[in-house]
Image (cartoon, rainbow, N blue to C red; front, side):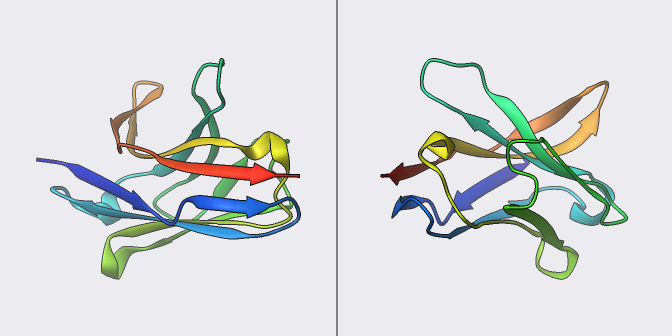
Length: 117
């Protein structure tokens, strides 16, 4: 079955950096678009960045210029490099796979990111 396992979350001060990883298994990684969602306490989960099979990335405005999504098809891994972190970036980050019918079909268990001032 499809499994997405995130790692790399943690606590950091504002202005710091973190890099999240997502290791995928159970499907042909290179054939699926990937993305990262973020859920801030009290809010719905929101898609913040996506990368298609060709490597083209899109970002929501709040993270553009600070976050970079990338993929390594050889290692079936997705990454999210987060720089200049802000307190409002605090939340649970979820790896997502296989865009179909206007949504991702698979979601990881999430990893917590906490940014303190």
